[in-house]
Every structure is written in structure tokens, then in C-alpha cells.
Image 1 (cartoon, rainbow, N blue to C red):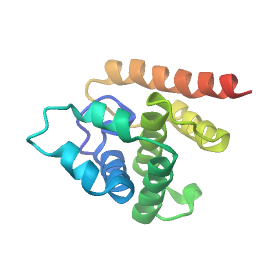
Image 2 (cartoon, rainbow, N blue to C red):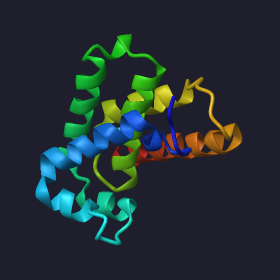
Image 3 (cartoon, rainbow, N blue to C red):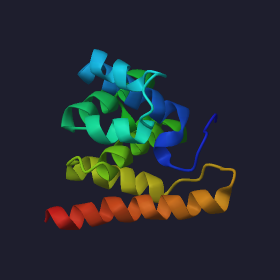
Length: 139
């Protein structure tokens, strides 16, 4: 796995899906914001542009990469899905209960090895709490 951070959306597969979604939905505006000439951090770009349409497009991108049968997905495909859902939830985008619940379940069952593992464990717990808390708030 070529991950580069402890957040679920920092694995290459999630990042690629999010990037593809932002490009599909926002096109040139996304390209301009991601330009090396723009000093805005990528987190701020995502904060500005994440919306229900980018969530749907990112999930579509994950399914294009790994197939539509989520039951057949391996751990990396599931993590990409989780990363997409977590990023959007963190940015305040409403996430459907079924997506949020699936991501939380897969994060709770995650068995991938990370370096550093303790930091990932803490981060994963925070992501699950966010997804579970968001679920309770929508009731």
C-alpha cells in the first residue's frame, strides 16, 4: 500500500477518487485551485469544494476502480471508500446513513498495517466516532 498519512483519505486510492470527483464536478475551478501558483492548502480546497455531488462522484470513482460489488472489495478498496466518506463528513457534507454506517463498520474491522500504527489507531477511532456521531445527530 502506498499510503502517505494516517487519515483514511490519505491513501493513494482514496486520494485518486477524491481528485477525480473534484475534477468531474468542478473542472477548471478545481484545476485553478490546485495549481502550484495557488498557495491554498489542499485541505482548504476540499473544504471549499466538497459537496454531495463530489461525494457521489468519488464513490463512483471508487466503484470504477474496484467494481460495484462492494462485498467483493479487498481491504484497500474498502479503505478508499472509507476515505471518501470520512473526508466529506469532516467537511460537513451530509452523508447518507448507509454510506456512513458502511464506512464506520469497515474502519472498525480494518486490519491493514500502518506505519506508524499507533497514530493510525488513534485516527481511525476519531474517524469512526465522527461517523457514528454524525449518524446520531441526523436522527
